[in-house]
Image (cartoon, rainbow, N blue to C red):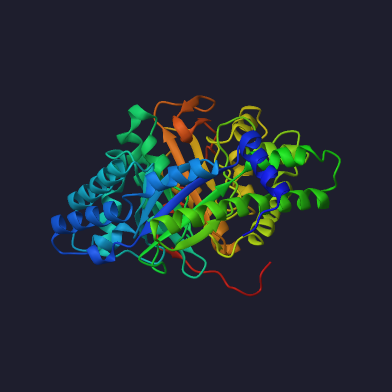
Length: 453
């Protein structure tokens, strides 16, 4: 890949002035050959395999970041969905496996390890049931382990028994970590149509279609896009799309170069580039502020979904031209607690839970890092999950829910989660119940793929 002098200058400006970074390099590792009826033997094999493959991940990423001058913010690991290892295990075995993963992540110096996960969109195996029984306690007793559960796909419909169970698990996790503002649920994602190569947490896992080991890269640049748009305050929306496309191309090109160097030095295959714009709590690194720069007085007002759709599409078009292998979630994340503009939108009354749900129809994920009152019922949380799963199922896209009931907090309170997880105002929920709907259970059938309206 050859670079012109002007491109080098632009990249330096993006790094120094506009917060361009590689958000994450995530090593995916298959653990299928570790499966054993002897749980202690299996845990030993898991620990050895992870610490062997990823022993140089953090050191190599930091060396490459120093050499190229582009920060690599997070180093992470994803594994085979853990439920696949737990077919003959007990709940206690599952919790010990989570602690083994946590120990490996701590020793390797990675931020998170994802994949304490189950795929139950059509039904549960014994391993799935064991993992779900252990999930709340496992995430509460560990610091770096992340989990996810797929409860819906476009092809299989929505497992409403699983949706009901996840509402109860989220309540249990909140109670177990009530002294930490319910932090366990910041590490749990409920998915519709999950992807197998997502490098972003908390929903990363190493799926069935992946190889033995692979390095996936998530590049992010809300700040770069925001600064680029500020240079064209009077552009029409076609020109705005063009500016975002060109910026996404430059961001992705820089990210792919760095990712391939890290993969080569670790002697593992390069996997995919995830083209997502992922915000942080830093000033001017906000997806919401991009939407406001496009022309909204405050994110959440009328026109928000159209502006988000424009931005999301332009990011994909520009990024896809710059990389041979695009995957992951690729689009725009709208996590409330990690985006200063989203937080302000809620505080000003412009952004509501209903609007956030509607926004997820046109962006890459779903209801993300949303704090709700601690007394929200399990059925209401399940109702939120069911709505979001329906959006993903009907629209053939990935959607997700990462919602955090915070014990002792009420609507309008501000909650601090710390670090990258940020802070969030408690958002208002609909006061009416959905218990009877959730308690019906069963599976919502897969939708008709024709006659689409």
